[in-house]
Amino acid sequence: MIIAIGSGKGGTGKTTIAVNLAKSLEEKITLLDCDVEEPNAQIFIQGKKIKEEEVSVPIPWVQEELCSECAKCSHICQFNAIVSFNTIPLIFPELCHSCGGCIKICPTQALQEKEYPLGVITTYQKEHITLLEGKLNIGHPMAPPLIKRLKKNISSSILTLIDAPPGTSCPFITTVKKADFVLLVTEPTPFGLNDLQLAVETIRELQIPYGVIINKDLAESNLITNYCEQESIPVLLRIPNNQEIAKIYSQGKILIEEIPLFKQKFVDLINEIKKLTGGK
Amino acid sequence: MKIAIPTQGENLEAGFDPRFGRAAKFIIYDTEKKEYKVINNTQNLNALQGAGIQTAQNIAKEKVDALLTSNCGPKAFTALSHAKIKVYKVEAKTVQEAIDKFLSNQVEILNQANVEGHWA
Image (cartoon, rainbow over all chains, first blue to last red; front, side, top):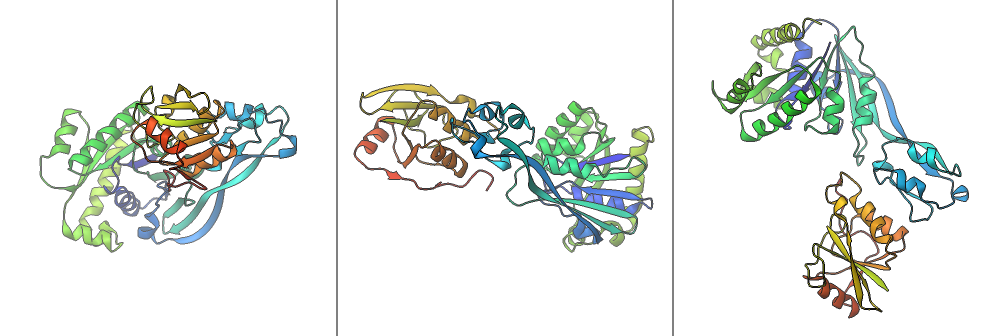
C-alpha cells in the first residue's frame, strides 16, 4: 500500500505526520521524501546512510560541425529549452523535459544525448524504516524526473509512506499519482483552507481516496471542520495547537516518542486508512 | 535600423512595458523609415517557463537590431545575444519616450542580464 502525505500549503506538518506514522508502526516501511527541493525527514529519522546515487537526465548537445542551422529542433521544443535563430542552437538544460524530440527531428544527426546531473537519492536505514531522500541540485527547477526515480523504489509488498512536496503543481501530482490514499495535512487558517481546497480539487481529479488531518488545531469547530463537513471529507486526525508539541518538533524529536499517547492515534489512523481503501 | 519596444498598446503613445518576456505586445520601429508595426506576444503572458526565450525568438523573426527594455533576465539575454540583438536599458513612460531616449543616446547598453532569473 502507498500512502502519500500532502498539503497544498507548506509548513502544515507533512513531515511530522509522515515520520510519526512510520515510527508508530512495527512492520517494514519504505519512507520516500519526495519534497526534493527541501527534504527534511532525515532530520527526524536520523538513519544510517547506506547508499547514495546520483540521478541525471538526458539532454541534447550539438555537434556544431554537423548542424545545418535549420532550426527544426527549436520549433519542436515546447519548453524553449533549445533555441535556434537559424543559428547553431542554444541549449537551456534546466528547461529540458528530456522528451528527445529535438534529437529525433534533427535531419543531420547533429544532436546527441548527454547526461545532465539533476540531484541525488540517498538511502538511510533506521530500525524498520528505510528512508529514501531525493535532493534536487541547487538551481535546478524540475523536480518530477527525480521524484519519478525515487518512486521506482516502491515495492508492492512493503508499506510505503510518501512525504510529498507542498503545492498542487507537477511535483505534487507526480508524487501522489498511483498512491492508494492521500492524507492532506492542513491547519485552521484561511491560507490553510484555501490551499486545502486546491489540493482536494487536484486529488478528486486524480480519483484517489483521501482524508484530512488538522494540525495546530484550535477549536472543536473551525473553518476546516466546516469545509470537510460540507464536502463530506473524513477528518482522520487532529493534532492540537500546543506549545509542547511545537517544542518537540523544533528540537527534531518525535511526537509519539515524547508523548506516547499519540502512538495509538497513528496506529488507529493506519487502520482507518486500511478500512477506507478496502484493506489493501 | 529596427528596434523592438515592449508595450501593452498599439501605437507610439501607448505605455512602455518595463517587462520583456511577458510584455503583451511589441512595437517594431524602423528608425530610417520612421514607421512601425505591432507584434503580438500574448502567448507568452502565461507561459510556464522560458517566456523570455520565446519572446526573443518572436522579436528575432522581425529581424530587429536592438531591444529597448527596463529589465532583461539571464536566459532572455543569452538568447538575444545569440540572435545578435543588442539590449538597451531605458526607463520611459511611453513607447515614443523610449524611442526618443534611444535616438538621443539616453540609454545604457547591457552587457549582461540586469535582473535575476525567476528561479534564482
